[in-house]
Image 1 (cartoon, helix red, strand yellow):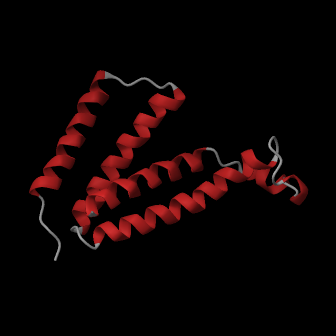
Image 2 (cartoon, helix red, strand yellow):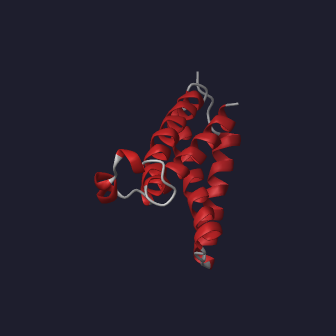
Length: 125
């Protein structure tokens, strides 16, 4: 289950990263109480902050579960790599960014490293 927790933590981390991308601090200061749930004013400003908190807590929770069963260095390396791949996939899917041949090769190398750590890495005590 540790590997599942690690993948879930990486998904929360990727979502947390995109909530940072959409935060608008200057507009948050101008938000009034009566417009918090407004579809056009409040929610586009408020939801990234809510996502930041929820995704951050989910990330910490699932990552902490995974490092109880995996070596911390292995878990951290895999978590970072999976997060990077999920972020790149989301950018391509939702934001229309392209991926170069070199990026594809390096992502495949990262995935090879993840599989190597999963199957040949040490087991935590």
